Image 1 (cartoon, one colour):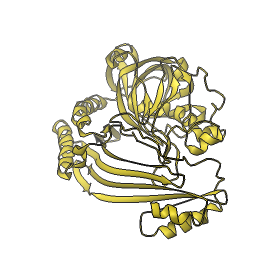
Image 2 (cartoon, rainbow, N blue to C red; image 1 turned 90 degrees about the vertical axis):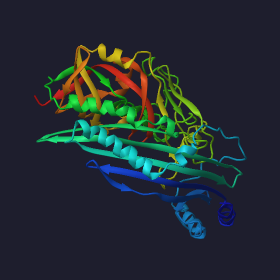
Image 3 (cartoon, rainbow, N blue to C red; image 1 turned 60 degrees about the vertical axis):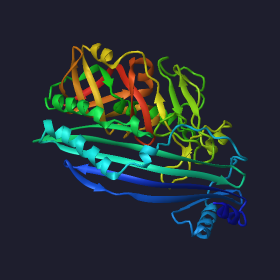
Length: 440
């Protein structure tokens, strides 16, 4: 990396190198059988240069072709954006979240296979007709950032994460149920604890029940809450604010939500699957309160958006794959409420539990509209799930619902995936007066 910086500075004004090396072991099951397993090592070197006041960017997976890497970045610079921010200068003390576990590093592939097969066998013991699936992955990675202004930092991280579930097909009726888990530490991941939840949903989900079109109280599981807050996360993205796509450019310090809503991006959460010591631009990871008790308090920034809006970077300049850094959540956390899940369920006389939506991101996220087919949802009567609903569509404006329709947040939280954002830790959310349309 030092050689790349030195060579680049002979041809351009500034340079930044990002290095990521990982050893990954993905194991997948399909149709209740082992489908694939492998252990693969990868490295990625990303270079940003400043040439004649323009940004150039290139990547490679080979450490021995850095001259081509430099030439490619310089060639791109003539078409690149203006260098209107500053690479961070000087050494800085990085936080040290607890994100490395030797037990994950030393995991054998046989143990991962045994876990996955055991999960599927537990499902097939009760539902032999079910097609079990699973995708489990162990990852050990090292990250280093170095730039021409003297910023240097590195850290190591482990993760063990994945999902499992089953599909049951009977005629035209298809039922799919799955659960997710993940952490940086092996002891914090327990797929086995979620088997009973999957089995319960399979039992209840085989009974289809009718539902009339109307408005209902709806209890969203953490998986569905990911769709609900995705527009919120889109609106607080610094690039969206900079470009005028977010409606919240002038809303800082305004009360936009119910006081029960506090949204945090905590990049230094111990054991958090998205935690980092620093972002991809060398800015130390941090905890950023985005919404505090309903009030918008911050956006999430990379160097470019922070400079454009005359704000401080928030340690969210992250890369996805080979892409250049952009404002991206690390561990998005909707802080829990004070009511147990069981209490929220018991409060529903007639309504729904929604676990998964399909097509919820088809519209404009900055308008807050979340609508989609209910891929997995259950009718609730007198606080109990009585069967699965089909051919129903969920529709709500998330930005308004989290202010005007919020009935409660659960004490329990779960890690889940948000499309286009990453991992999030979310509670169950109970909304009132949600529009549900049906074919009948």
